[in-house]
Length: 350
Image (cartoon, rainbow, N blue to C red; front, side, top):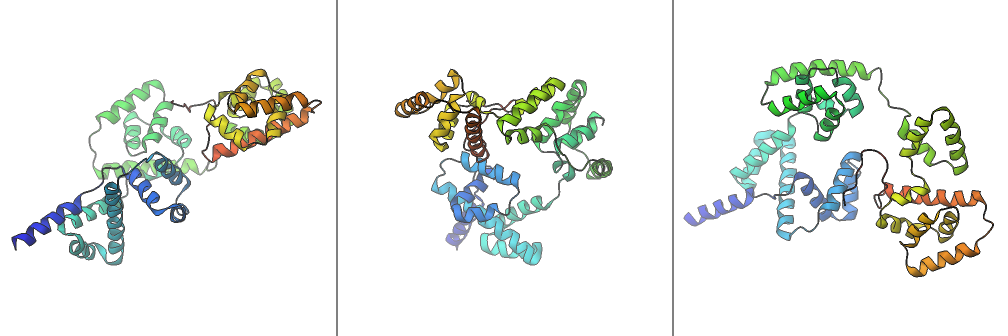
């Protein structure tokens, strides 16, 4: 009898043991364990933002010990089972099934976690809105109201909103968030309902973001060099500042000087050697040296030899070759295989 009791307690202790990985790391571990084919089927049901976050976590995951992986998969299985039995028969039915399968303590732990996940956090509409609309909406509110709202926003959203507030209000909002302790659900609900009505009324007048600097920069990136040059020349005459702002958002062939060596080597492997030769015909020595330093000495000699014998090349052919290379670079960037450093808030930490 004592032996059975001890066995049950040992089992109970083992069942409630969980992996120390973050929820994101656990999701990545499950995806890795499934293999590429099965994982791709899961990706089809995720939003673009979730796919991006999950892919980043998979890339950062590194080695996981067999014991750690077993814990993750065991937790995943139990969570899925819990959701299924609750859906099939409700909480009491789920409790009976889970207690029989895993013991009282583990069953309670699983049901507690599920209950928390089913609760809807206040200000859900805030987390689904873009930052530009949030800033416009919140900037005239009292610091205490802004602090309450941002306490329920995602941290990156809150950071961007605070950064765009007037300096004096910025400090007051940070102080209010730091000193915030608790508020009654009823009070939060009143504030949430009031803000949501006003927020919805604002969105009805501006529901879609169209055009803008990022969009026209992308358009210009896809344009042939001759038209690109003409447009910037003419635009610069009318509004030099606007022309420069668009340029800073674009990527042109000459911008490879801002890329890291690994990224340069990556796109060179994808390019036709003839395109590289033609592109370099219209480039300065700095770009040529950069390319030569990122290929083998044998390939560098071959390109140098081709440059010497390739004469009377039309400017249009040079520009088209450069544009094809830019196309390769953009495609690889979209696939996450190289990094383009553009003007703006992105910083690369070595």
